[in-house]
Length: 394
Ligand SMILES: [Mg+2]
Image (tube, rainbow, N blue to C red; front, side, top):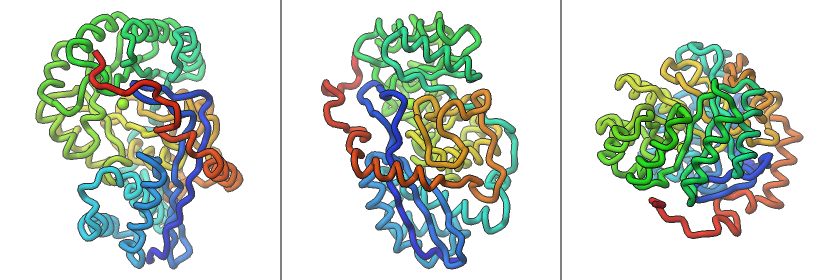
């Protein structure tokens, strides 16, 4: 089997409401659907987050295409080494989502070729149902409480809330509201996206402890690992690394410094599904759990990572997904809005390869939306953020 072409389709899918974090806002999500054609009639499907932009992903795919055309998509290690070393991409992090999509599409092709779901190629099912978190992205405390209640009604076990705003009292009020709305049984995870200084972090997390946090995610800079380790020792809440742990090399450094109690990993940020499995193995050897980070994904990328998550023991906590925000999806009956999850979880698809299909009508609809209004969905959407970002904030 030989690769003959890479096709890319950017799509824009709206959120139910705006996502807001420590230094940004977006009204929906842009992803690039990637289809890798072969001379045997099989097509591999994957998805790249538009990170940092759809244009970067599209340009990366155009540049990668000649490196993989004519290659056997089943020789995944050789193909990725060719992209990284011959193509000189190995040190260029911004291109990772595009390369990861090509890699994932090759896994889909391999699974189709041998008639097995990817979960069986990554070790077989360990978790029958993989838990995902419910992302509460509302701003006002009363709305946060309502979303927390909705998460509980839908059966989710973990809620995730961004903190690190310009007003620490508001952060505390929002976490308190989430505990009230979601109830005592809900795990609460907060993410400051590096927004706090050490002093602000220690003071604030101590105030938040009464709400029983599962993790505080990347509360301070991920670029000073010894300081992050000192923060971890002082806050009394398990610390989850994220911005500190994008790549396997980053993860190794976090482990060596003792900077986190658990690590976020993301196949789109480190070259693909095989590296996601490797990341989990690295952390397992260190005795640490991992959680899957998401840059914002539709059902295609969600399904790809889900196969690895289901086959890997140390994905023990709820993983990131955008079901709480997405108003729709481009897949036929998989992923998408939170109502489509089963008690906050998903089982790996059972069909060959990725095991899901695109809904072509929806792809067409959301490709048109990208063409007409794609700029409104970007990280740098006009008009936001209204103030210049500054980290740390306090
Ligand atoms: Mg994060």
